[in-house]
Image (cartoon, rainbow, N blue to C red):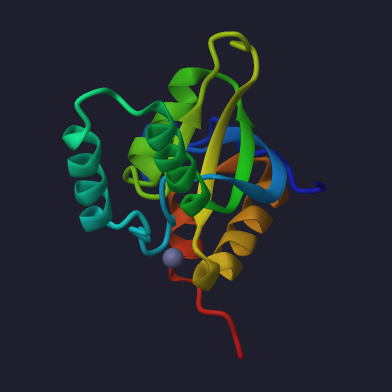
Length: 158
Ligand SMILES: [Zn+2]
């Protein structure tokens, strides 16, 4: 945390725009994919089959739906970085412009509008890329598209 904040420098260019973030570190959370490979772990065929099963019920079977939703959630429990952002707009900018909507989401809760977070997920294969990204973020107190790209392309030494 000794690095100077570089927020708001180079505001003119999207490539170098830095947005202030505060990392809460790496933990497990429901993620919408891996920021490196996408990691489409939710099997599309399984979802289709499950939908058909649900539709086949004349009466809605709540237990079946609950079980299905729980399964989906379990499958999406990935390593992720949670960061606090200053505004919903910042959070959305990071997800769309820096991550291209891959493996990142805004966690905005109406009941807690002051505590806006972004969540960046990684599959087990790309945990080290996530650790690298967290290093970049905690080192500068900001995030840039360049950091995301560097972490995505980073290959660990074996
Ligand atoms: Zn991955």
